[in-house]
Length: 274
Image (cartoon, rainbow, N blue to C red):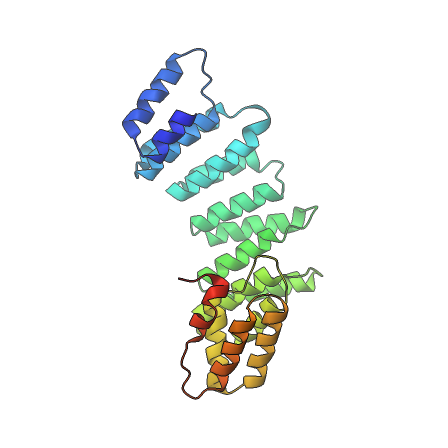
């Protein structure tokens, strides 16, 4: 497998195909589903979707035992990347969808989002909502992210209301997605309260979107809503999102009529922005 992966990494298809032929001719070597997945990835890297698809079909045929469900999820994801919508649904209908768990639903919805099949993703989401035993916030977060990316903010908002009405909680990652969606839609009035919810949570290793935070700061400066800006700065420093140096610089920025430094430059060390 080390040699095969080396050929895939370097996009050496001749070497990869020669090795595969040697492996298949050697009865002491087991060619399993993962081998075919690796070969499919090699073809995918060079844009040969036909051969990549053929290797995925072979991988599906070879999937056996305890790892077969894992194999189906890998195969499904790669079919989605290629654009093989029928194969994505085929894997779900034949193998995965009979007794799906949260991971299965997450993978299926993610695959449909990759295919821009939002109607299909919504149907699978509805199925999960009516069947789940253990709530998994990653699944609604995935849909909210998808809605925001395609500009369907009203659907994202409706989904959030449904989650909250059902007694579930949303974390900062959800609000970060919404804040970014509002910024992309130039709806700063809604982006500001969303970013405030983001910074109010101390998620280790997770900061609010730098571009969205900066856009909110600029918006509050233009509106002369300095109290809210300072409140957000204070929450940011309390929860470790920015340093004391950045905090001081941002305070000077919002009070300056002609600031010397842009807010993105002020927080670049905190975010390691080059």
